[in-house]
Length: 82
Ligand SMILES: [Zn+2]
Image (cartoon, rainbow, N blue to C red; front, side, top):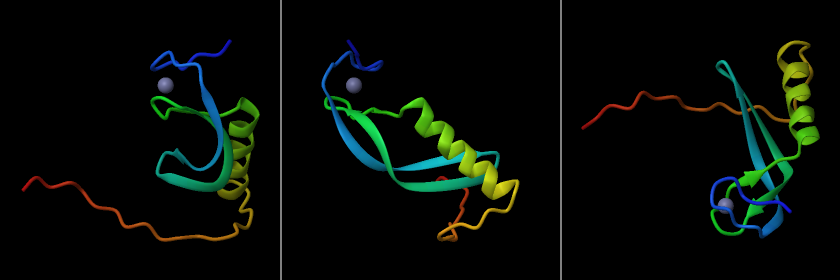
């Protein structure tokens, strides 16, 4: 039986979510990624082959120049305390 690593809850629901993969300063946003979400704390669990596929896409895009469906510009700021 599977338990949540964070809260020990054993009820999960299947969801599709947006996954943000980051490596160095490169990002890949993947929509509609299947995962299981802990019903109690909301921690999301992804299957190893799902993560592998995202990693492969990331490499295809950044290493081999694979064309992406959509590219967005993301604003970047440093946090300055007021
Ligand atoms: Zn949990």
